[in-house]
Image 1 (tube, rainbow, N blue to C red):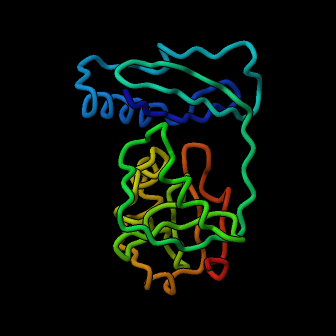
Image 2 (tube, rainbow, N blue to C red):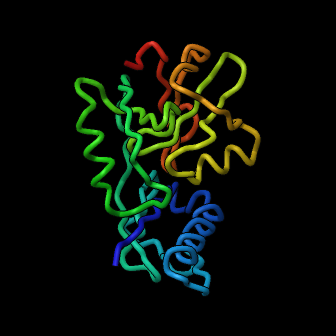
Length: 197
């Protein structure tokens, strides 16, 4: 049976954004495996004594039930350039543990640090994060990402970012692009659109 993962940020021994993670984990279990029971991550996953102050990445592997939990210290990757890659067949609507398809696309990044995946002429995600674009006034996020990330959902619900149709030809409307995911806050990785190749 295939597996999924849930990645959760832990800061100073506190799980972050847990409600959104619980919702996605249980929705995925229900839709893919027919699970009717709800799992509360905080009740199932305990922080070990090895987790100290600072930022950790908690990775939960699961299918109908939780199979594995791993913790590791987190350091933000340095990303300064993005390459646009078109792939009209890719599907990643659930956070699958098997990232083979994404990794194969990532191999086409050339000398850039990361990729922007374009599907049917619309901007979606990077290989590991959602995207946000700044037009000088407002941060927008593509309305049809490959995967609706938990941080994206939270920022949309708070009104800090707005969903928009962002086609490949719309890049000229923006001056900054940011990467967000469970581990990355707004502002952690922000790149000039000029560095999108």
